[in-house]
Length: 414
Image 1 (cartoon, rainbow, N blue to C red):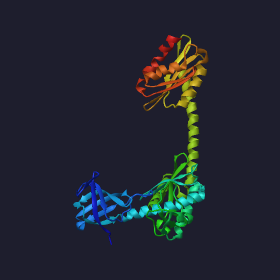
Image 2 (tube, rainbow, N blue to C red):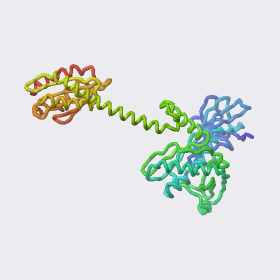
Image 3 (cartoon, rainbow, N blue to C red):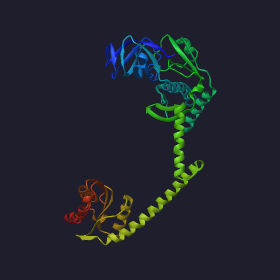
Image 4 (tube, helix red, strand yellow):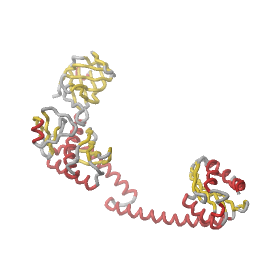
């Protein structure tokens, strides 16, 4: 049977009202409720409050505690008019609750497993349990290794497969602690507490939980990270969410195998072969670029002009990267002997510049000043040593004019 309850208070924009009308967002307080209010890291229930044979419907998006024993049902009145004193059917979203319950129960098992694998120093520092996941923060000094994560998963899933019955008891706090129940650091407890036994875990908890560990289904850790000094965070999924996560991963692996034209069982080996092949191609590309640089260096040397005893060259190398520019620069300096050189390359809107001045000419011309002369005209800046400097820019349209002015710039200084 659906629990029935009486409306004892209504709030719209934080103000008490006698009635709420369709479309208004507000809070409904009942004299009793099956809804769970957010507490202990578990989010509040969602669902629906229905009156007048369905003519009045209040969509509950969240449930929060107004006072320890007074729950506020937050949401929107979807239809009709709801008044103080009305009787409603309180319908919890069962699927959302079931998913949240699975995640909460798994959190208890995971907490115990983390202490087994990492050590007794592990203490809960925060948690968030909702319908999609459990997020658990705990004290630990280092990232978890892949092996540690697998061990925690194995321990939790063994507890799930054991399908042990969950037991909840109310007892005095001191008696609960003596019985081995784990109390969370920083949490405030009354004289009487609820002790939850789930699998081999025993903790103080007032949340909703599965009837048997097997109800959790599959448990899978999907993320591990650091959130503060000495605090790690684990996120995990259970049940339908865990199945969906595994199936999505399986799809991605299948897509990768198809792209590489390999059976899934041979995927790792195929990736290794592909990476080796890519490295070989990169090595061959570097060799060809070096050869091209040498060839371009020979061609460019003939374009140098003499300015007051210095060979001056300013040119663009098509398709070159920074490494190729440097290699070509070294070859040109060797070839031209006494020289001031600027080389450029364009990749989309990016301009790469390198300037070189032979050692016997740095007293007259500094490479850093030379490269900045060109860089400023193409929307950039740079710097370096007197004999070698590098710069970048973002206005390639101005590059031809900037390079054309290099000879005159050198003439003024040499």
